[in-house]
Length: 549
Ligand code: F6P
Image (cartoon, rainbow, N blue to C red):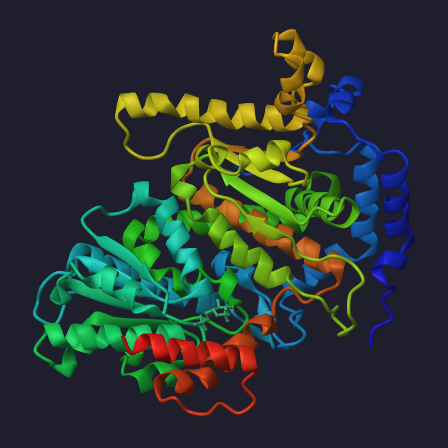
């Protein structure tokens, strides 16, 4: 057991509590800006192509200084350096945490157990590139000699969300002659809908699973193999031309029947939710091409370097992490909204949900002691303009404090017509207007001045004071996507370090998996499940009864 002091008893923590209850008891963004208009320029941090404006936050110079003191006292930079060095900071799984090595330059040296892992990373990237080019050029053909026109990625969690999100994000860069789909749900409808209009002879399945034991993925991959063979006269030799695997588990891959030559490897020091820039990104690479994929890795690397070397007061992931701590731990904010003003980022928040909530949804510290402080927030959100006509009402006028990130781009992505391009200004006007309305609201006097009848004034008043970070970039390029993802990866890291939790394990998903395996025979065969609680037993009985119809 370490002798790390309990977080909430650290003087830096209690100083923040005092600051909150005294200087920041009723912080008002209108007043903070009136007292210090320079904050609009000062509270901006730049990294790569990202301009991150955090001026609309309920903070002053003093708040930021106190938060930085907390980061220093809790050893964020020390843990960060240990991560980059390849130390085993994932303590419960006794693993290094080295997703940063996936985007390291060829000549870098990063050692795990005395072995430089960078050559292995680049060897796999090179194999992936060669394979992606063969598929894209038509040189890699299916069993009957037909060109591959469809790529279906089968995976779940980190083996789905990353590539699926990035495929959507970079759709403008994809080869439009290829159909790329993602199947994750063990609900047979997912695979059925993904393949129903495809020709098996033109379809490549990319089975993505770090462990190659995940039941959803193995079940879907088995059904996909049956669909393929049914469409190709049952010739088992077809599998070699239509299935590739992305995994750390060569044994299980060959056991499944996929040729080891068709496996693209990664390693146990890459967490599932941190893996789409590893072999797990193969479907994406086929879609956008190796060159674009490498541009994306360059983007990741820009932010890695920034996180590693930028001074604390100009360190974007550190600042974003600290702002989250401020609201979650000192304002009792329960959630954090991520609201991209880009249709191409429609899956971005879903991706961040796993990244953030699987990493920091923990209630014991690194020594196994129950924490006495709030940890990871509920992360949610969808593209901004759609949200405006759905749930923004609650953010504007509800009773909860919901900090939000607004993400937008100066130029539209994609080959849009001039008319559609012109819509971009309207899209971005919405982003800026929302940030303004959320921060500054509309006072009762302002509402009255518009001639609104007195009884309606309270309904039309906006208290404002809802904090937002605005992330602006020139355009959603592969590099910018890499920069954004690395920014959030490291933000999540910062928060986990301060909360003193292991952000790299995920034991919380195990229980459900084990119980599902135990309950399944009760559904299929009506088997007795020892120890099944009365409520679940009644549900299982009702299910079996209803299924008879
Ligand atoms: O949901 C738990 C989890 O282990 C995730 O962490 C992981 O991304 C996902 O399952 C899929 O795991 P695998 O890639 O091993 O199939």
